Structures are given as structure tokens and as C-alpha cells.
Image: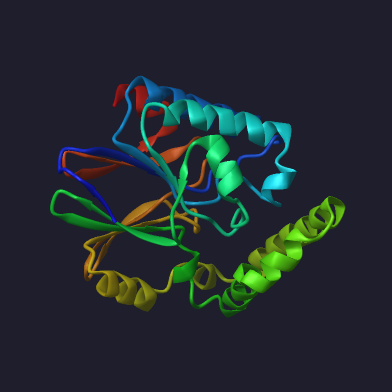
Length: 247
């Protein structure tokens, strides 16, 4: 559990889905890192899907290595923590070390002043998407990942491309309520962790929701610009990447 005073400044982001085919988003992300470096927070939390896909640390391309160097530059000014998303759950300790960021478990509690905050990527809350949850259990198993790591690079690339295509096709066919978080899962999770605030991404539906146990903040994606959540002076607020320098 991470503990901060009430006057701490924390930033949360998710679902930037960086790739070398999205120059506008890449530029917004790099500019956001630069702005945070100019006015460093007490910590930055990245709640998954930093990249649009991740095939393994051994397959990091030059563009992804460039992003790692930019993240590492900010890490010299403030600690950076990372949780896996559904697109980059294979991101390992080797690449995290290149970014100078620390990997977190899929759920983590933060205490800021008197507030208890639970952070996660968010896909664990989408229990109505039964097919996805079944696939998630298979892909996240140690056996599956161990076998995957033994494959040659070309085979990994082929599998990754097929899974991304199938994911897009499945997502297009599912009703919106199936791919959103389940209300009961939100209630049970906040109760079980004893928190008053839940922060997650995954659904790309940026919003704040009043829940029975407190507040839930959904991090948005980075289309057309980056959206982050800022905790400062015991208050949460959404900030776009192009507003950071004015905070």
C-alpha cells in the first residue's frame, strides 16, 4: 500500500495505446511527460494499456524503446508505477527497468490523507463479458505465458496480430453494457478493499460516478488528446494533456 499526505499531488492515466501509427497521441503523451517533469507530482500511476499491444520485452521495437527513455527521464523527478492492461499484460520487469518504473499488482490501494483509493486497469470489473473473462484467465495463466515465451519471435508476432484482430471483431459485436463494468462488481470490490474511491480505465468512458461506497473515476483514452486524473489538495479533477502546464 502506498501512503501520501493529504497535500500530495498524484496523477493517474490509462489507455494511451501508444503506437508508431498514432503520431498525434504520441506527441501528446511525450508533451505530458515533459510538463510533469517541469512540475513533478509526488507520483504518476499508469493503469495499463500504455501501448496498443505488447508482445514481450524481447520484441520491444525502437519506437517503444524511445518511449521508455522518455518515461525514464520523468522517473528521475518522480516515482512512476505501472499496472498491466489487457493489451500489455506481457510487459515485464526488463522493460519496466528501462522505463525506471515499478510494476504493481493488478489491484493496489493508495492512502492519501484520510482517503483510501483503489486503482486497477478495470477489466476485472467487466464480469458481464463472460467470454473475455474466460480468455483472460487462459492468457494470464503462468502455463500459457511460459509456453508463449518459448516461441520464436515470428510466431509471437503472428499470435499477437491474430488476437488483436479477434479482439476488435468481438468488441464490435458486443452491446455497450456488456463491455462496461458491472455495478455489483464495483460495489463488492470497493467493499472488500475498504475504499472510498475507485480509479480505473479499460472502458475508455471518461467520467466520475457516485457509487454507494464512494466515488468511481473512469480514465479516458487519448483520443483526441490525453486525459488524466489529478489528485491535489484532497480533490480529484480530470485534466487533459494540453492543460497540464496550467495546473
